[in-house]
Length: 227
Image (tube, rainbow, N blue to C red; front, side, top):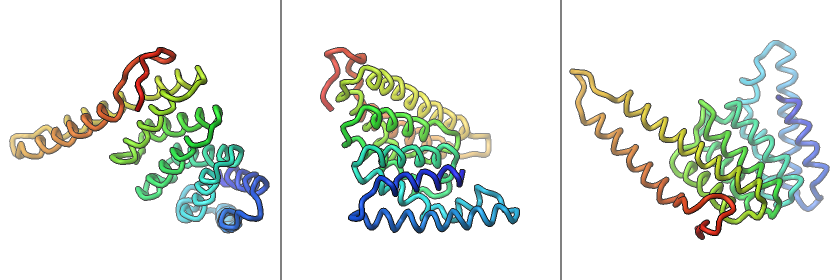
């Protein structure tokens, strides 16, 4: 993983300009950290633990690449953020997960079909992985962004992919809510208030999601409503 991240950082640096000092400085710091990861791994350390201990510095330039609004740099940034989320490198830090979702969703402003497809794939993986920490506000932002791609894209493939991704995300959310309710079912010694609390929270999330994603029609139809 460290090799993949290092190579992506070098590609972003090559695409960047001298005016993007924060980005280039962030890349230099991240590369230095990844060199230390490589040295530690060669000494017998575990790769994931070493990267996660430095994840803040390693992650930041990928987010800055997404913020650049440059399609090539954003593509590298999205790819790496997606890998970090998919393999749970951000799982132990809810703040970084929220920041990752924000950076990915901000790429929606880049008018590029390939970028939009990457956004869908990264957000879908972020929700679907068993270690997902995409919850509450970040989850709503995720669904809203995919829905906006569904509404606004003129690319038939992206519209269909966004539609399918929304269905999969919502199915997964409901699956997890149902599992949480089953886990909270009271034994004879349990107080029913705990179950009521879980049901109430699940219902609240459900209502928010339904309000956020008012499905209006199928991909390509004229029934797609304005969000």
